[in-house]
Length: 236
Length: 375
Figure 1 (tube, rainbow over the protein chains, first blue to last red):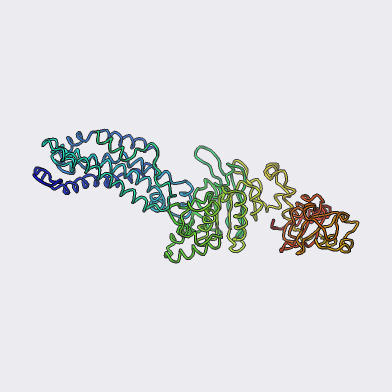
Figure 2 (cartoon, chains in turn orange, green):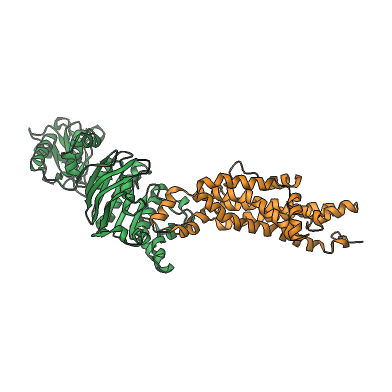
């Protein structure tokens, strides 16, 4: 227990960097799965307009369920595992992804779609070659919010026995009255969130060379900044 | 030939967009559908590439019902140009143009080579190839739209108000360009517009439609201007259709006077020789023969002509190339009532009075023979 800045209590049975890896895995897999689920759901909402309000309602209600309540139910099926932590995180990401993708796909100008149809692009080609690429900035904006909020939410996994990544350190810090561990947890989580967000901004710049310069962040005004969302989540 | 046969489009709510429309669109010419909003012109266009399916009636191309082939095959055989171009904002200009060739299975290199060729044809600089649509002006985007439609060399081109969203100067340029391209390529073009001037300018045949999807008149533009089928068409053509119709009469038949023309450095003898009782003015040209302005012979002193004090000569018309409308316009614009004719090089070939132009107009009307004349 003596010595290094990054030394952590043995009860966690891990190194600091091991916890970082665990934290990222637990945060990012749900976001990826959430995105894969949200794409077809959102496309369905675009095609069937009446479906969008109820889907939005369901995702919002799911988002309102505290993770602890999820854990109580899930623990009977998936036990004290990473999966139990990741399922609610994946579900939460839908509340960001579905509207982001729907808005993005809907933002494709009608004349662009008409031109695609008139040139003989069928529905599948139209979706993958026109709608999805043009919706990419909006989807990546959603991805940023979901990723940052997921990284901050993982910590709650400490409640089911050391499944909270860096959050476990927060717990240990309080148990052992070690401020160093608390700082390692809080600052580590924040740095991960900031790095992930920066990486996604870079990805967006790389995949959208077609966007006018100086207008590379077309975020709708009612969408919260990722970091702001992360802070709100941390309070939950 | 595209044949529209008793086609009606009725929507579930009972609205009739097109009502029992029948007409034949001739090959290798521009057929324009024109009319006010809600007259069914765009609906008609979209039924040709099956973006809208008719409720009744059939559309055939060269005798083949358009529903007899896969819809995307049909669409890839027709170029489509719309207002605001509808470019793919996430693709470069060259990839936008190469879209249909790529869909048809051309390899990338061949499709891009073809796209470059088309950029040149529609008057786009090759340096724009790797740009994205947002980096182009509205007029340039519309040229890309035309190039994209022409990429796979389709026999048919459908154009839905393609030039409505650009400013008048750019629009005129695009119209002239379209006519030039059509001269080279000879496509079967179906063109929709709400602008009757555009219809008259570019149409080989013009279909005037009225609200409710009825065909009011289907005729060549000159006939439309001479002989509107009813009050609706007459009203739609506007108040000056008589003047506009002059666009269809060539100025070639005008008898030009060459006497009352002097160069700016003319001697007193030359001025005296050129003065006659028939023409109260002399046209002064520069030493190269380009028009400067009119003057009364009495006020013209050899060796000291001040171009600033000459009377305006209006807009010169190109004799033989431009129409009687341009000639009349030149005569009306000059305080002398005389128009100046020039050759392709801008040098004066003669002058003509309003009265002579008037006689030519009467003669042309009597003959009733019209032709498409530039300008």
